[in-house]
Image (cartoon, rainbow, N blue to C red):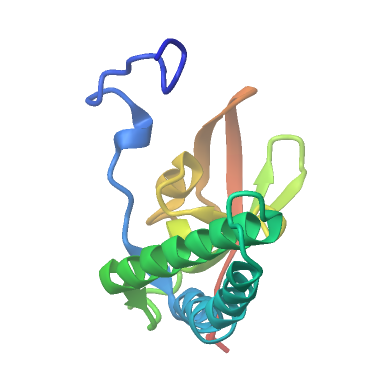
Length: 178
């Protein structure tokens, strides 16, 4: 089995991919995952199961591309349903504001300004809600860890791919806070 499933050995104690992930999620994120699970269970799986049944009824399955493709797709949907079911059971939904909304905690929208005066706006969310387009970062990310507990006008040094960058917090907001 030369070359198959071969990866470089990594020490589990030093491998950052082995670090435990937090199981926090916002109420909106949990609702989105439940909607995805509901859609996969009620719509997608029965639809693909019907396609597999139709393709199987055509006869020889060994040379039937429709059957092979839809069977693989059905297996992917079932695996995703299983993953979401297990993941939703272990997640802890954070559906209330922190006691002190003047500091950065989970769910915060944080406006930052770097040394060059460039503005950056991020939100600290759970691992399952990361969205690079919206600039939502995981609470496990180095930047989020550096920001936790800080207040407006605090300076934060974050190690980025370009080296250390100094940010100043210019605003902190929370969803649901007027």
